[in-house]
Image (cartoon, rainbow, N blue to C red; front, side, top):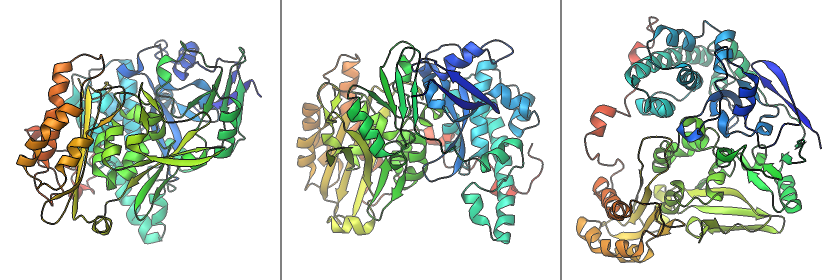
Length: 537
């Protein structure tokens, strides 16, 4: 095993010797004092908004991307071979960059730490190919906008920056299509912006190093295998090892907790792919929530909506779907929706493979059915096309999820409810799913109420008739407080599902309340007819 590794920090090679495996990137940068004003990467509660860095990476479909990630949630050995930039270095390297100039010209009323977080989120958004709608803009900045007084100024600057990026991309696509190289734009392999960082990104390929086997001065080990077989062999060799993916779950206790052996899944190619099959989506366990939302979420609307509310953009850029399920958090907001989507989890070990419905994956005591030596390989989410529903004897399917939190982002949810019904042509319920988290030591499913709903017409009368069974089955069994409120939520979230989806063939949920009147999530943040306007920035 080696006692050192290197990574690229602000364009220069940085060598690390013997540093503790439980040390975070933020702690490392704080020790270096990377900011002229003093170390901005001081220890903080990451879920209150940690300090960010810009990470070059390859997404689940092979496109190079910049991702703003929370440095307080990353173990330093996870950065071996990576390419990282801080906001300070970004500004020094390219002071004329669109994002830098726009932020310096605006009055955003935020201190240097908030400015650094905002700047890197804007940089990530600037280079995104899919950022076109107001809902996406707010999702990109959710960890900043909801915590800043002058959010209207931030939103105004963001719209200008992203509109300019879209105009430049539009012009480049026209030229590329005429030249017969349009696919290179889609693949992220053609420079659109002609700046230092865009040229670096289109040429970026992660170094094909051997597996990382690192040991620190206290003989604690960190492994980063590249194949699933190697991962399983290490898991078998070190049965007490902690398996980490994005690191967001364990990063909160980094520096405080010690682990003799850490095994990272982020370089295991078999776990980093998303495949669109005729009947389902196959999502590798190490795929980030951002990638899931940007690919599967477009096809599976409720999943895209829910993931946009998970933590913050900087956390989603590292958190993985498999990692979120493996920790079996009692309040985990993704599990109920996966149950309602009739998803299955695929497990693998050296002894073989098995799979289980998502509803059967979680066990009592905040645990899962994972056995020693076993890891999550992938999660399959059905695609309910017309032909698939017809084979199931249904004409339509309604599904949605609702999460209740104390604030918009970076907040542990009080409760999540997810619901789905498959309906016959006459509006009769063929099958139903009613699932909750945040009520017990595992996600719960109201199976009795589901059976009572089957065979009834999808109407308010049927909902009212099964509510007593829902209330009886879903009991508050933990000690997180707000029991009366959460008991009421069990009922009202299910009712909300019906009132947002009252018709059999409604593809679009009915908006309740006035939120949509001022949020306008589906509104473009730029005028498509004004793409040729050169006056923007």
